[in-house]
Image (cartoon, rainbow, N blue to C red; front, side):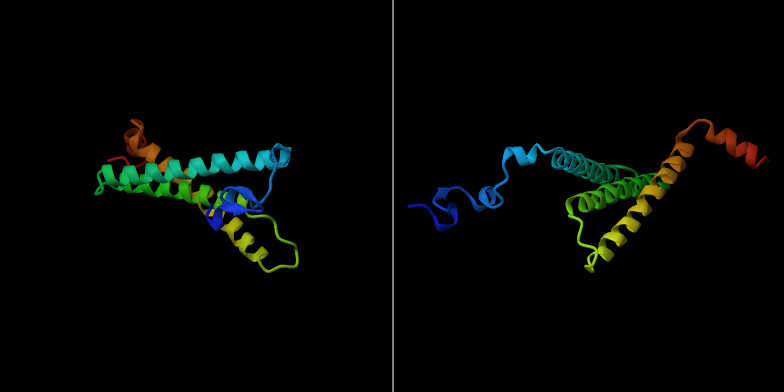
Length: 142
């Protein structure tokens, strides 16, 4: 005798596998396939950037400002992909609903990491490049 939660409409299986009745043809529809691929790539990037931020923070020199700046940059990149995943996974609501303000807020919040991260990588690049000392000497001569 099967457990009641494993029996759905006379078919054995967990509820999560039978609840939406999506066939393979529905999944291979171009729009849904593109959304699934974009969701998978964004989720992978979110996890990768979050892992990198934690790795740099836990293994780096926490007293150096360049390490802190790198952690902030990696965390903002993870935030970007997290918001991207939320926006891709959320279906667009009808125009007359109030959840449109939430999506509008997320789209505006997405601009923060999208514009901030390149400046952070630029600052890190100036710090670690050998030409940074030469640039600093030209800007502020002794």
